[in-house]
Length: 462
Image (cartoon, rainbow, N blue to C red; front, side):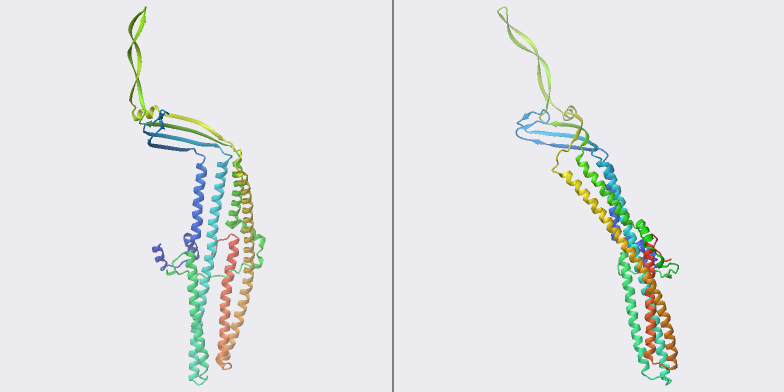
């Protein structure tokens, strides 16, 4: 960013470049864009909720005292080391359309967040245009103040010549000296206003106040083809409803709130899940037995006589039970389905539905408030455009009258018919009239641009 800011000193910025840069750096716009990314992730998660969940677990440890052998499931008073593995998969088959409604709601929330970001960017563009025009106005006022100082100095020089020639008294130069001091003060004030307006623009563009920034000074043309008296509020308001992103965002939130009611109602619906699992385990006390055939002698009595006979018998022989053999032999599988039927949940589901319905009403009220605010803004923009047009016309008439008065004062002053005070008074009246004309012209241009903004047009100075 430092390289870009360094380059700013070598270039002049157009209005569109200022708008684009501000939209990239604005904290409000960036927060809105982060909200968009967050809602994109929420939408992804809503879609992934259709997929089954897979979990695995491994446990290992030792048991002491009277415990149950995890392999033989028998009580044992000896210490036992154990190890087990489990893997489970679970998938929701039906949950009252929670997943489908959740996906639809996430889409609406994402669209609303995108519209919020668009509204932030558009609103910032209007603020940038206002700050840009204020700089142009203050720079013209500064130029006018400098011209006034030059004129005052020329008039003082001319007066001094006439004084030396004996045509005017010595005191006549004092009025021009005082006027020069006032003109210099006006220049300082104009320079300060230029600096303040540049500071406002830098703040909107998130540029360090100490960095250099210069804008291009285009010719600001008063839109003579546009007549504010022809603006029709219903037409402009309808265009604004279709072009202002915050209106569409409010409508999306109402739709999202209605889906929230369906999600709350799903709490009354049963939930069907299917599941499957794999498991195995190992125990240090587990033994594997093999049977060996041996002949066991037994004494029998036959015809009153005892005889010793050997009978075969299978005798269990304990052997070590290797780790992997245990895991293989203890391997088990399971599959099944579970149905959860809500019967009573402390009125939680009912209250959730009521809360969701209240949220719908609240979102509808917020949408109405946004529309009412837009209606007021459009009406104000039209009224300001019409008022600024009349102010501009009055300022033009005032300048024409002040110029005529000044020309007459100039002729009379040259003939010695009026003194320097009357002459400077006429000139100050002309200066003030020109300043008011400048302000009226820029105010009119901005108010027309504001109306065009509500008409959905791009803000330019062309």
